[in-house]
Image (cartoon, rainbow, N blue to C red):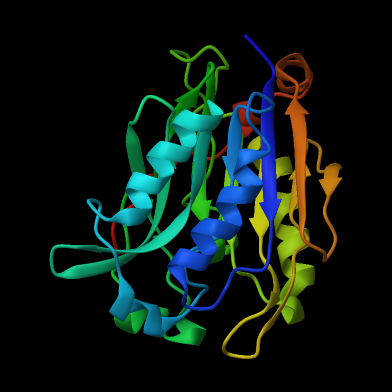
Length: 267
């Protein structure tokens, strides 16, 4: 098994301007060619977090999906982030997972942010996604999902090389500055309880609703220590995740053996 290089792009997404955001993030992605395995962008990186973005929703045949395919091929790395996406009669806050070979998988945000009425305009996803990258199993989620640990609970999977459902839990977000303490705290909690690495990528700046974002993008190890803590300024940073350290911790501290068994039901 190989170590995994993960790049976090923390930037000030331009409000309701997909062209400007593709230019912004495209420039930052370009500098990572040959230096990383996985590039993580914020939630709704083409528009900012906005209920009004529903009127500009793209399709899976649209410009942003094509752009992600092109950029992933150019830099030789997976690129992920979420976009407002129309699928049939519904619009989703959809995380896209674009591979260099042109494959694009997706996860639709399950937990919609009620306090901003996201649930009144967007449809909720039902299934979590687990993807494989260089032998690592990764569970990517979106922003408000961070508050709901049951949906993402890790577990033992003897058929997998790492022995668990996933090795890296990943969150893309537009998490406002007034709630930065829960963001920072919950990223660490999710890593500790799931015996995994956690990556969280948030935006910075002020959006069109006059909300400020403090960033605080981070890479957290399996005991809750921050390997990267980005602060509140635009930044691109790459961190290597150690496979041997992850497996060593799981061997020494197999808390999964005492976990409670349960099944999720669709509410």
